[in-house]
Image (cartoon, rainbow, N blue to C red; front, side, top):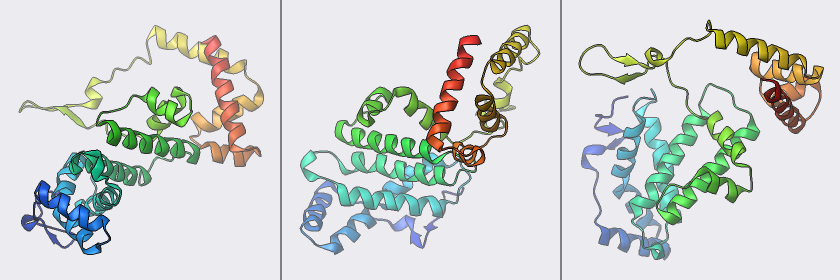
Length: 257
């Protein structure tokens, strides 16, 4: 992704203005009084903020124009919801919203399929996270997010993990001028170890103790890679029932592994 482009989405980035704090406050007062042209000036005057944020996503292989447009949506949301009375810098409030909008775009375009229920939990968790960051100006814990959603901490962790962007095994993690070290260089292969052999036996024994329906669900979910919704359609039950049966089966297996 070329971030040294001068023109992005028809905008000449070399000539973008920078607004002073006083000018920003003045424009917000005017805009919140009903002047729509002030909103346009706020957007144009903060496009450099969007440019600085999208540099964090340079290794995703996405077109810079697409990320810039998505970042501008986050910027507009931040402008429309900014509260002058909170005594917080606009950039402090806007950056998490721009990042959140870009992350949502990247997740929605992720080739790995994630069930709708998990995505819903993850999106709600990220919305709560953005809200808490804007209120406190610090990163909340997963436990705090889960409490706000009235969900178990484990459910929130599982949902957020499910929507994480996959990383390539050939992603370089260190380079000192010589040959780079890739992710795959740091991964061991213990499939042939004694411990791996014993664990394999334990898993097979645990699977034999499950009911036929539980075996079928785990096979469809983890060996065939189907979503809970797809499993529900195939065996004729609801997605919520699949979720409950899957959790119960995993709990039964943990007793024997």
